[in-house]
Image (tube, rainbow, N blue to C red; front, side):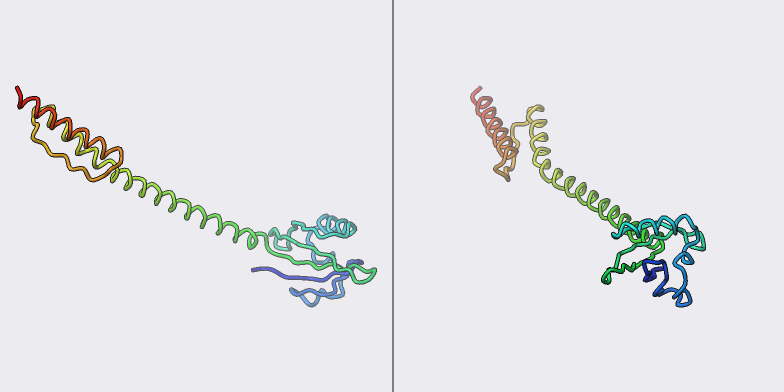
Length: 173
């Protein structure tokens, strides 16, 4: 990571710089590559509350600066934390990629479980359809195994009773 910190007095003097000790005692403006960005930060100092600013470093890369006031009696100094924008955003990008992968895996698992459950639930219907086709072809000697008490089990029982009823009717003729 490219993070560093600095402490700046209210007059714009660098009191501490974790990146370059040579800037201590110099103007805060020396830490900016663009005067307009420095002017924006100094105008925010006047508001007296925490803020952040996006600036450009000497290499032309975007960086995020976070400022927090430090009140010492009637004097206000500023704590500055600077982080390269790409480092700041890389964690977010990694998190998004991770969440997308987890979401895709979750959808795949849900689809697989749904398919498995449907196949298991519809398997008894296949035996009922097979029995109906045998009855249609005149084979009344079928046996339907009833393994459940749900609606499909009730349908299978109805087919079994219907087949036995047809056998009795045909047997009486």
